[in-house]
Image 1 (cartoon, rainbow, N blue to C red):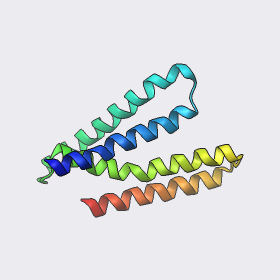
Image 2: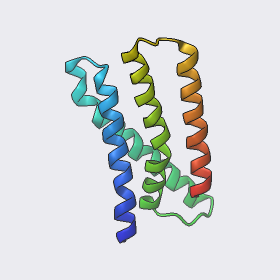
Image 3: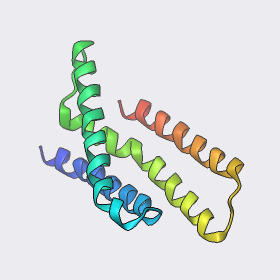
Image 4: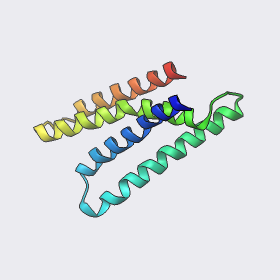
Length: 116
């Protein structure tokens, strides 16, 4: 269980970083809700993936699914940091944002395939 504890922290850290980046562009009244909503969506997604894997005959625990999800969300978090940096630098080209998001989506998808 010790290795799962270490891997589980990736889920928490990526959730906190992603929520922090999202909060930078929000109004003050919505900031409190963003972490809760993001955390619930990620836990719900992990639950759905775990149940689906179990129903298909796979052998994965809920905490292993959380670990994989934490590592797979990391490229999306990096993309949000890059897009926010572009916003600060005054680069508002939609084409660049789409490319950065697409690369993060592909990276995230292929990292999931390698981890599972």
